[in-house]
Image (tube, rainbow, N blue to C red; front, side, top):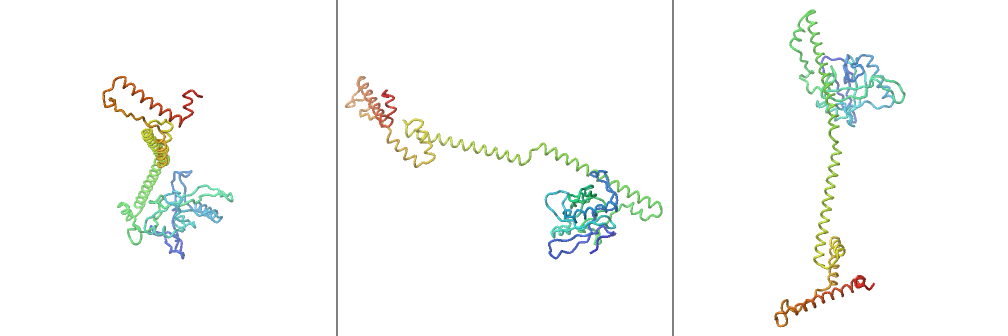
Length: 361
């Protein structure tokens, strides 16, 4: 399969058959630069000329790097290094049309080209580069080439003929005046055609400069938005922290309410119990209900029983009305019985407190 030469039709790329492994396909004769001047805002001089000297330096740099163990230039998409490689440039050379290359592609990428999903190629290079191993100062070092949706340079043909308007290639639509100029003879026709070409070049140059300015404006807007808006990761972390804090507060509130409910239940079951005992039994109820029930039964069995009043309230023997003296005597007897029961309970369960209260210590 021969390398490309100048052809009258725009489609000038040969597609190689699949390799024996059926995993890669070599695409030969892909035009990267056409001969002539190229205006570019990122070049130190604002423009550069693609001529034989330019090409010789690029070819020398390509072999100096890659024959010396460096990696072949990678194929990307829209000049974005997202970690994915769509193929490699394995050779660079000149043709009648300009600087061309051979590409080695995975089979599925080659299929995308044939389907017209990857249509144009745009190459990138370093004007100056120092060889990392030899220290040689190289020029026009091809760094990568990217698949792009529209051509970035003039006179670069598409990679596929899927959008061709005829079986032989792409139609070139010319203005009516230009067609008429082709039929003219003499200096008038030549001059008219040159004017048409100059105007077309100026329009294309203005379009390229406008696109570069728009890209610069979009880049500045992106940087401003990045400064105004916090990173998505930071916002997500803050939301997670707030949610976790709320969940902890809700859990703490539920625990507090559960303790209060348990304390009320213990207080109802043991009206005479002190606060410390109530608190301990409430915690036990929440932690181990079965052990709480048995412990509560023990406390209830040890609690003093209220005194029993045999006489009905408001009446004496035979339910006769009580005199004031009889009522006072009965009240004094009842209080004395209650106090005696409390003293007996304290002497049995809290002997130290009883002695301290009676002044025996």
